[in-house]
Length: 216
Image (tube, rainbow, N blue to C red):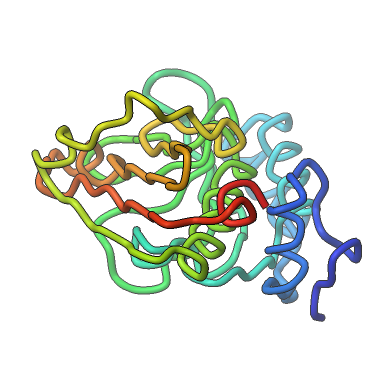
């Protein structure tokens, strides 16, 4: 089933996020969480955790979005699975399968953060909505920027952000977006933190944007 703006698009997104999902997203059928409830209860997984997963499934389950510029595109589609007790407390669960073989999985954290789990759990955004908003920004900026500059490793620290403001809708944690007079800057630190690999830190600078490119 194709998604259209205002037709089965999850709420809580900005107009930019809604337009991105409505234009480019599709919804596919996935297994129901309820099919696994009894088995998980028998493994002493709390009912409240399964309820969280069921709510995620109703809101996001089966949603396929275009690939993002990092993390090998992100999840193939959203589908909660494999609840696990988090070392820091609470419970997390898989957010969806990877598009290809990578050294981490996509996870919804104990406080509903969206992140990756490999050598260590690393929340990228405070919610899955933040991840979706970041995909929407990257898509729009890549189409409208006059120049796109990639900076990696220690050189990311040289990216000047003094005259930029944080893009709050992405709810950035390890990954953040910044808005300037005619530029957007995305800083991706998730893989570097998750895999203890500082060279993986990446900034993408989208410059020469008009007002629509900056704010939608």
